[in-house]
Length: 308
Image (tube, rainbow, N blue to C red; front, side):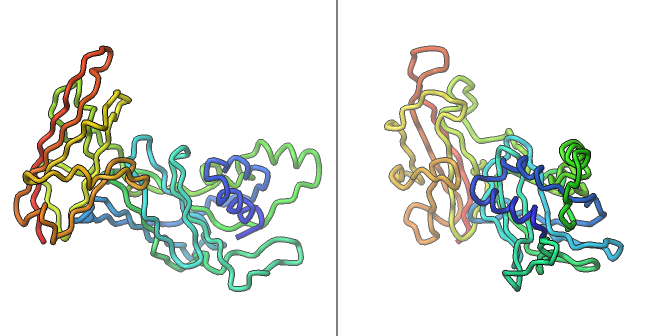
């Protein structure tokens, strides 16, 4: 990975992917070289998280190693977590930018540097003719069509004149941003899903919304249940929340989770609350009907099957 990418990665690791615009100060040459990407998808039986896997291939015709992979995400994708990277690569995620990015940042010789001041390509970049697997993440959102972007290594561009500096700021071919100077590919990505389980009373249905539980769903091994309160900004009284599973009060098992962005609980296969076969989950919570001062109760009933 060259110097501008190293600087970019340091900035990203400190303040997030949304600072990618700063990378315009470290432009590179045209890196829109062809590549290919294969994908696969599995649904985790215990969490109902969708796992997205990618395999990156660099064709023999390319003249440089691939050191960047970006998966673009639409607004509304629900939970992006559990990132996995191949050795020598790092994963970065920004909901604001709508992207998961992997970059080859590793070197066998940590002090590697060329006489020109450039850092050579990462020892872990995908060389021409090679394929690399191990890129993955999980989301509650189901799969759909989307876009990936790859980039190849390029040496540092050094402006020598005012004209060079002007070109530096205005020419996309000199940008290090993948959206400006990468190779776009079609792939499978998580997409927003408006379907969720509720009692279909529009005025109060947003009081409690399930993130990963659907009627007649099947869980295996264990059961992760996640729900959100006040999904559309409704005023909800969390002290009135009641949750029962097969008649047993399990309200206290649900804790706020930063990872899942809601109230979450895991029921193990040996739990007295969850049983093999059909299970019945009931919830209730009070809140204010939007636009009024009237209190109402949102009640939900969901059945799911469990296989120990």
